Image 1: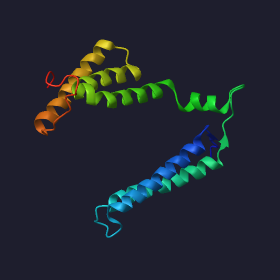
Image 2: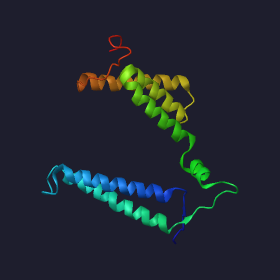
Image 3: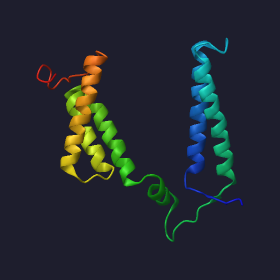
Length: 166
């Protein structure tokens, strides 16, 4: 039995962009060492990106065959796209990641990672604040100990608290 799926708004554009990105990555992987042999430095990246290109082509072809999903009454295509493909949690989590990246340089790894973990847990649905605070602290403590002591990785201390935090 073959099930006919309906195409989501923006699905064709998204799959075409993924295909273009995959082709770019294949070209970049080829630039590592060309295709000299199966054991060359670029052979595995080229294999992985070739699989990305093939699956991208399959996804584009499937999206073109699917019928568009019916819009709700009075809903424009951009509004339907926003409702179905960019839910609030996705936007919130993306903003949290951007804020985390920007905060790393200024407040350092420890504080920015702790705040990011707490906010991430809340955005993903955990409303138990005390548990979020404790789990974030324990996780970050373990990460810090492993990277700082075992791997001897210097984690950024941040410009704002330089000299105050480890």
